Amino acid sequence: MKKKIKKILSKKNKSKIVCLTAYSKNIAKILDKYVDIILVGDSMANVLYAHENTHEITLENIVQHTLSVKKAVNKSLLVVDMPKGTYNNVKEAEKNVKLIIKKTKCDAIKLESNNRNYKIINFLVKKNISVMGHIGFTPQFKDNFKIEGNTISEIAKLINEAKLIEKAGAFSIVLEGISPLAAKQLTKKLKIPTIGIGSSSNCDGQILVTDDMLGLSGFYPKFVKKYTNLNRIIEKAVKKYSSDVKLNKFPSIKHFLNGRKIK
Ligand code: KIV
Image 1 (cartoon, rainbow, N blue to C red):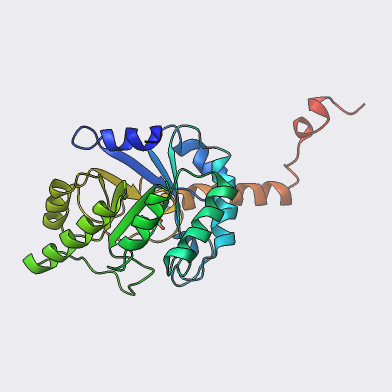
Image 2: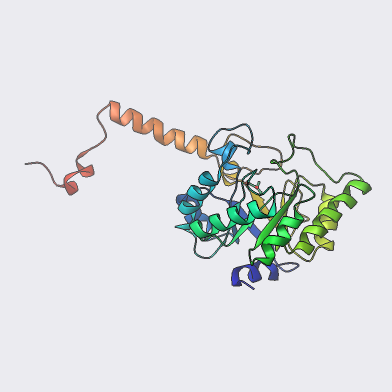
């Protein structure tokens, strides 16, 4: 088994798995020191491209951003989201996954579950491709965010879906918008690690969209903890720059001619 994947698996029931998204090398360079998994998520659709949903993200978008992220990733596992409509059947999935891996040299891909595509996961795993699953709120297939797993039958459905994904060979699974009780049961019943987002601390690991937790995206649902307010910090710096340029305070002598005075 691939070394980085083995390391992720070994954390189950021992230590928490830390994951975040990245779409560029500057962010990835910082994350790589502190996280286990970096995901090039199709959330870039909302976060970067201001689309209403994730559906318009293309293979080209994903490849381009992964190429940038890859430049700064050394130790973390680099996982790439398959865009909607690129894995409708096994042949299409194989062609597109191979293209992403060939162009980006990423470690693994993630695909969202629609209750049927565990068969696609199984096909890809048999081709030696590492796959991460994703259940609960799956924005490629569901329109409105709603916590799932609130009743015994909903929990049973989620467990059944997750078990099929595990059996298909996925090495881990994202649980998005799942009740704490469902997350607890899924984490207990699955051998593979569960990575939660909006699914309580009852998971083997956590993921957030980096731009959200940095206070940059302007999108802060209840499950996001804002660790800083980059919007405010950047605005302050840009305001000062604007004022400096207008008042002729920037550039000053030290910003050109290596700090030497003009004779
Ligand atoms: O696209 C993404 O960023 C994701 C995470 C929310 C898990 O799928």
